[in-house]
Length: 334
Ligand code: CP3
Picture: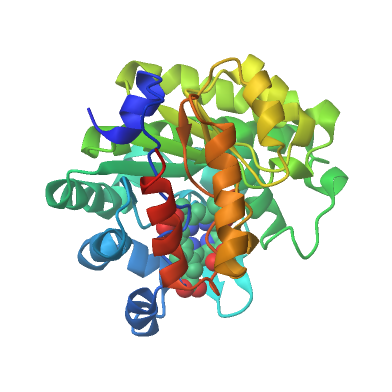
């Protein structure tokens, strides 16, 4: 059994596995080199040769315990027929959604489009003994992108997004089944662990968390449990509701963001393995500042099943040497 599974399934705390969200990305010059020649980001995610190569880039440089597949959460709206574009400096831009088209899309149509993704997983699996992590967006975060059509960072109105209750209900159901199915196919292709990113869960008013975040995630976990791969959930930004998330959703592992107090969550998680937490901005500080913060997490979670990671993705301005530095601190921890 490999390191992440050992920590999550067996709750083994004698070793701290390490990987980074967005470890394959813009902070790496070798990624930027490939990206420069491949303007269409979706096409790049569907190019199994290049995407498997990008997935393995961070493992060539650093002593990490897992490869996260190079893909994107917005492959799901793309698979459901919505146009998805990544414009330089603007983030993702989605096209108009066609409710009817989305709702009648069949699993077979999605598989056809996603075949290269499952091929990437197989290729990566053949090239590394490390854990291979598959991933997906959570229904709420995907719904936000699909209806908002751009990052909610710029503009977002909860009441506007959820105004058409029937549409939202139908779309969420479609997303639950598409996400569950995409997870299953990734596990079949060889993914050892799956992470569900609910990057915009923090936009939900507390009273609406059950309907839009907890329940859809619970339903997905129920559907994929029998396939055996552990699922890491990352409901970013829900603050004190991390406690309810753990007791209601009971994920195999909970990924925390940088606003979560690590000492508090250790008490609240009820033994559920914990991942992450360190603010990615800390990696832009000097070495003494980085070491202090990394060691804080290592000390707090000593003796608890913990996976080292950040509280969100690696920032593009991070120096690759910093990732190496952090990895060595975690590795040398006794
Ligand atoms: O972690 C990894 O190394 C694997 C690859 C990965 C990507 N996206 C590649 C990517 C993963 C796990 C994701 C997840 C993802 N994508 C999330 C959840 C995590 C989070 O950050 O909250 C979200 C919200 C997205 C949607 C998305 N994709 C946005 C908002 C953007 C543009 C801005 C940004 O953060 O980069 C992307 C583009 C994207 N996805 C890039 C990469 C390497 C950058 C593409 C480029 O412009 O070169």
